[in-house]
Length: 207
Image (cartoon, rainbow, N blue to C red):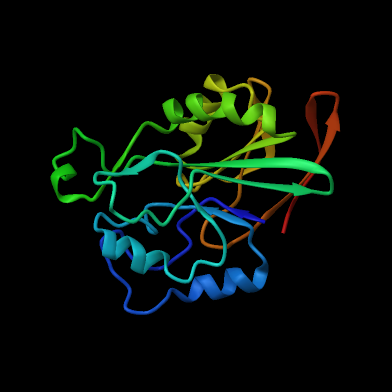
C-alpha cells in the first residue's frame, strides 16, 4: 500500500508537539511506503523530524538534499521489495518547495532539485533491478505527464498534490498514471498483469 503525501494535518510551517495521529492510522492500515508532500516537509531540521516522527514505513523523496552533510534527512530516495517473486522499486518525487533561486533558500536546511531531472538520473539505474518500477509522486498531474514523457522506462506513476483523481488510469507514453481522491476520500486498487517486458492494467477499483 502506497501513499503520495500530505498525510498529516500540520501546516507547511507548523511544528507538531506530538506525533501525528495519521501515522498510527496508516500503521494499522499496513502502508508500505509514503512519498512526502508539502505538509510533511519543514524548512528546519527540527521541524522536519518532528513532522515525520512516528511514520509507519519508509518516507520517500529522491529530489531533496540537506545543505549541510550533518543535517539529518528523515527520507530515503527509493524503496525496494520483492512481492510474490516480483522485484518492485518505488522512487519518491516531491514538488520542489525550496530551490536555490528562492528567497527562502537561505532560511532552509534543505533544497529540492527538479523531480523530473532527478528521475532521469535514477530510473536508468533502477530499471535493471526492478520488474515493476513505480514513481510515487507529489508533483501534480501535469508534471506527472511530463515525467511519463521523460522517463518511458517507468511502469506506473501514482500521483498526488494536484487533487486530480484519475480513474480509470490513463496511459502516457506507455506509462500508466493514476491518482486517488484527496483527503482520504478514496483509495485505488490497481491490478497489473505482466505481458513480456511490460505491464497491462487488468483492473482499477476505487474503494
